[in-house]
Image (cartoon, rainbow, N blue to C red):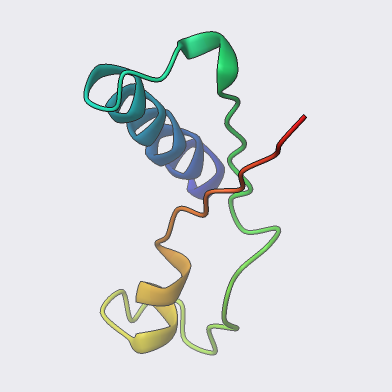
Length: 66
């Protein structure tokens, strides 16, 4: 479930950058990491409003200049 959610979140941001930011689709790539790369460890994952859970609901942009 978390993997699919992560991929959906990344795709939503990608679509926003294409539609609003006028960035060509071919210049973007998205990766959804799911539970494999959390920002913070969640000792109680059921607490969806915890500081840790909110930190893991994020999108990170990485600009690569070629």
